[in-house]
Image (cartoon, rainbow, N blue to C red; front, top):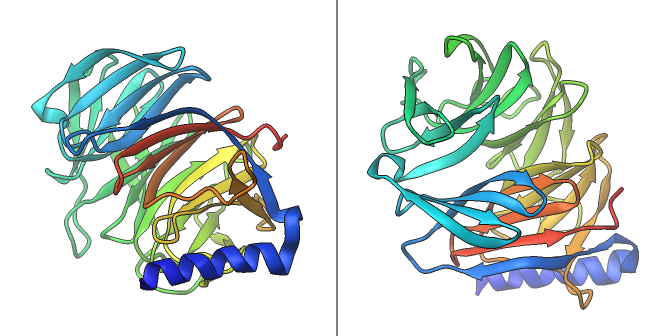
Length: 296
């Protein structure tokens, strides 16, 4: 009941306080209701209509061609992961069960296992993004830090952040994206914000604040960058998708074809490609790809 009241407050605020100008329409490209053994966990876009869907419970990767499921790969070694990301012709698998980051080839065979020295808690990678050809950023959730990794040897060369509330500090970072200016954006679940970091590691901008009204965040989890201009943030508790620009300005809330705010039970991971946004709902086992043509 508490969750429902919070969501209703959010929706009422969206309609009354701001009107239609903050409602960003979207259309469904594909929606799949998966069973309890097929928790949709992450997606790799190969193109707008071709992607790889990773499901953690079964350790399964399903290839989609023109929006239709096709070849399936399953492995015990891919169970219980939290991210599945392709960078430079390798796939990186956040192995939450074994507290490791695993580098795979495109046939899903292991290249190497990457571990980091703990900083008060065991290594807990939840996302990895490319900074440039020489550097990747790895989100270490339980240790409240960003690790800098060289892809050639899988070694960690530096780290940013520590647990705290101030700018430059982190509290349970989860998802990350990098824009064309090499600025890093990271969701912080308990600091209820997205924080932007300069390439030097300095926290330079805080996006969002705690609350349930449009432009506020309650439990930000997923993060996607669209057209290198817009940050889309999924709220794992309110179940909504909000859009900010890369300067931190609130743009709007994503709606369905009828103009109603699009809602999910727990949209934990989101990924973008062109005007497409994949939404992976852990709680309801829903995998959805939507198109947002109004963002340019």
